[in-house]
Amino acid sequence: MGEMRDEMKKTTANAKWSAGALALYMLASYIFLDHGNAITTNILGFGEDPSLIMWFFKWWPWAIAHHLNLLHTNLVWQPLGMNLAWTTNVPLLAFFALPITLLAGPVVAYNLATLMAPVLAGWATYFLCLRLSRSPAAAIAGGYLFAFSSYEMAETLDHLNLDFTVFIPLLLLFAVKRVQGDLNRLKTVPLLGLCMTGQFLISVEISITAAMFGTFAWLISMALLRQHRPALVRLGVDACLASLMTAVLVSPLLFAMFMGAHDLKLPFFWPFVYANDLASFLVPTFMSAVGGMALLPLTRHFSGFVDEQGAYIGLPLLAIIGLFGFESWRRPHARVMLIVLLVIAIASLGPQLWLAGHFSRIVMPWYPMVWLPYISSAEPDRFSLYIWLLIAIIVSLWLARAQTPEAKRLRFLFVLLACAIILPAAHPIQK
Image (cartoon, rainbow, N blue to C red):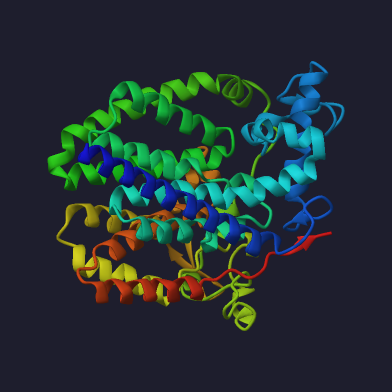
C-alpha cells in the first residue's frame, strides 16, 4: 500500500509539473505573440505568407465540399492551373483548424495555430528533457528555450509551416524511449510513423532535413555509444519501417509531387542567401528585445530577412554549452550531442560563409549539398531548429546535474540570465 501511495503522489506531482509547464508556455506565447490584440480582426505577424496559409485553410474544406482535385487548382495560373503538391499546403494544420475555420474564419484559425505552435513545441520538448534529465524544473527550462528560441520567434512572424515543430521533439522522445527499452517495435513503428506523417503534412522541407540530420545523429551514436548498439540497430529498423508507413499514408501527395507537373522551382542561389551569418550566433537581431534595435545597423546586412534570422544564441547560452562540454565530454552521450550540434551549426552557415553581413569567398562543407536533388532546396538558416532543440536538451541536463543546492541555484540564475538575453521583442501585428 505504501508503494502504491508513493507512486500516486509521484504521478500527481508529475501531472502538476506538466500542467504548470503548459500554462507557462501558453502565457509566454500570449505575451510575446499577441500582447493584447484581437485575434478576430488582426493577423499575428506580417508579410504575405500568412495569407497563403489562410488560403489553404479555406481551400481544403472548400475543395472537398465541391468534389475538386485537392492537389490541383485552376484558380491560379490560369488556364493551366497549379500543382499544389509543391506548395506550402499544410493539410494537417488545415484539418485540425477546420472547425475554427468554418465557425470563425481563417484569420482566427491562423492566429490560434500561430499561438499554439510554440506552446506545443515547448511542451513536447519538456517531456523530452524530462525523460533525459529526470528533473521537472530543468525540463521546463529546456522546453521554454526551444519554444521561444530565436528560431521559433523568427518563424512565427509569417511561416506557420516552419514554426509548427511539435513533431521534431516527439520523434526524438520516442527514439530515446526505444533505445532505453521502454517501447517495443509494435509501439515504436506507429508512433514514429505518425510523427513523420504529421511533419510531412506540415513541412516537407523539415521532414527531409530531419531525416538527414537524424540519420547523421544515429551514425554518430552507433560509433560512440557502443553499449547501445543493439538498441540503436533496432531503432534503425523501426525507423525504416516507420518511413514505409509514412510513404503509404502520404502516397497521394507523393504521387502528385513526382507524377504531376513541377510548377514551382526555387532559385538556385537561395541556399547561398538564406544561410546563417557567423556573427548571428552572438549578435541580437531585430526580433530581440535586448540590443536588437541598437545593433540593427549591423544585422540588417545579415543574410536573408528577419523572419529567417533565428540563429542568435547569446554569450550566456554559449557559455553553458562550453561548461557542459567541459564537465561531460567523457560521457559518450554528451559527445554525441556536442558533435551533432557542431556539425549542424556549421551546416547552417550555408555553402559559402557570411561574416558580419559580408558574403565571403570561403567555401563551407555544405557547398556540395547544393548540387543534390531536393536537399539543395533546403535553406541552411532553418537548420537552427535542430540547433535549438539540442541546446534545450543540453541546458536541461546541465541544470539537472548540479551537485549541491547552491550550485543548482546559481545554474538556474544563469539560465534565467540566458533567457533574458534572448528575450524576444513583441511581435508585429498586421491590421
